Picture 1 (cartoon, rainbow, N blue to C red):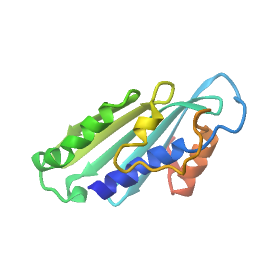
Picture 2: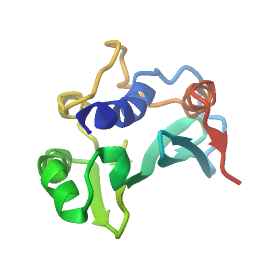
Picture 3: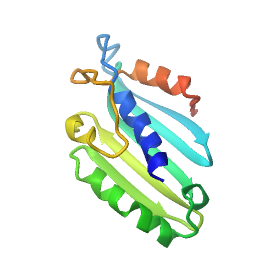
Amino acid sequence: MKKMKKGLLSVIVIIGVFVLTACSMSAKEQKVSYEKEEKGVKIVLTYYAKGDKVTKQTSEYIIPYSAMGVKSAEEAKERLKDVLKSYNDIKGVKDELTYGEDAVTEKVEIDYTVVDMKKAKELVGVSTDGGDISKGISLKNSIKLLEDQGYKEKK
């Protein structure tokens, strides 16, 4: 599970390493969603942006218990108990887990207008290339990264 969380978190944080390189394309807020299924886990990433600057990102992961190597919600809760707390301790990050009959659904929201990226980088599985993200996250670069990783736009 730790390896899976590392991969999922890396996607979120890698996006954060891209520097905003262009001026705002417009002041209109836009929303785009991309999805992918990997090793039985369904991932939906949604970006909210003004121009090219991402203001918020939501991520939804539907993780079958079998993909986690557990058989029940109780086993999944035990395995994930510390993960939830570590994310919710960071300003600008909300993490919520919902346990169903066959899978856990994780919803993560990152508000880039208030998130403390220094603290977010300290989370398990988070890695960056040391790039300066102080000027914001580029929607254009984020989309390119997702498409390069096999995500498809959700219409």
